[in-house]
Length: 252
Ligand code: PEP
Image 1 (cartoon, rainbow, N blue to C red):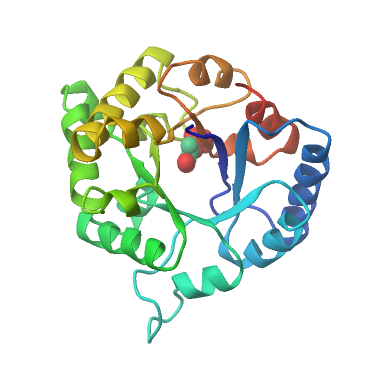
Image 2: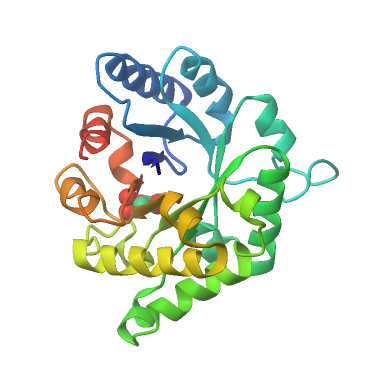
């Protein structure tokens, strides 16, 4: 059965004490919640990952990084590798976030290598895809998302692909307060599932978790998550406060 997932992408936010307090509060509150039907993933900045995995050991949430280098070791000053993440028990990595595509020039080929590096190290990629506003306005959103999947994810074998989570994040909805409507999200998620089915077969497609991201919050999560092909969310701004984030976690 495919998993319901809510993942928090903290981006470049929080001091160490604030991050520790937030993770501890989430862990504490999760203890008294019934989270048997959904997975909770926290993706804080790199420098807080070890603290997060320490707390996660006694809790039900998993930890993901927001990025990783495509190489396993070497002279790449300032970079973080898959083996480093694995050695801190990090289980997931966000790959292909639109901010990395836009500000760090991460292209299709590089993202494919990052997906490979994650899997090579036993890390599950949360692969982000999504169109910018002019692409949607031009009616090109399906074509753009298909290209992103084809170029950076669909080179995987079926066995590898099983480890992947997909996040549809229309770029025009990220951090803008304008979420995709539930109908728009459902339409694209169904399309993505169809693409997975035509590449890997119906059975694998029906097992793939496809998350929605883009101004998802405690007020709109329930309606978004009630769509047949929306299996949860990748949450940015609304993941930075424990109560709001946990209300999203319980929005199924
Ligand atoms: C994100 O950046 O992954 C995201 C979904 O951000 P926000 O929820 O703030 O729109």
